[in-house]
Amino acid sequence: MGEKVYTIASGKGGTGKTSSSVNIGTSLAMLGKKTIIMDADIGMANMGLIIGLENSPITLHEVLSGKAEIEQAVYEGPGGLKVVPSGISLQGFQNSDPEILRDAMVKLIDGVDFLLIDAPAGISKDAIIPMAIADEVLLVVNPELSSMADALKTKVLTEMVGRSVGGIILNRVETEKCELTSQKVAGLIGSKVLGVIPEDVNVRKSAAFKIPIVIRSPKSPAAIAFKKVAATLAGEAFTEEKSAEKKEGFADRLARTLFGGKK
Image: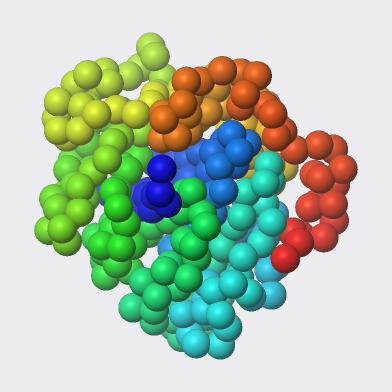
């Protein structure tokens, strides 16, 4: 199996796209896959905030402004994951050239099993470029009609740039209040549902502690669902034991909390 580049996208903000990227990426790394996640939302970046890398000295901003090489912006994340955070300053955003993203990605994928790109929400140029450079786009959708309408627009845009939607992650599903079943979502968007992530208070708690839910609360409903999606992408059968093989230890968490990630 060669390297696979997935851009994780959504039609609007608030769907849980970044938390999905972080937890699926961490799960892939815990399966022993060499995985990098990149925060390509250069205008409204928050991956660093939920993974403890918000104070990284070199980010994608510096790379896209020509001040650093992409290899300098790669940090150690949880569970063996590698992370390329984006900066949070407006000046860094203004100085960034999204066109450089393609060249940066080419340098990253050598020897990597998975590269997950967290794309900006919406249909701006900043969102289009990550879609255009991916092998496939994964849509994060909430089970409500407004999210579905936005997802359909994103699918059309994906196809306009010559790419296809590889699947849907149906996120934040409340069983009793769900407007749309996974079968209906798949039929409306015209793509398979890779996983159904239930609404889970542990997702928000884990983000507050800057630790992915698949590590902080590995047996919670959302964590198990994320790990199942990762197993599907890796082409492997899901087992709890295998997904926990590389679980981050206390010492790793402590070091990451204190030092904000090791280059």
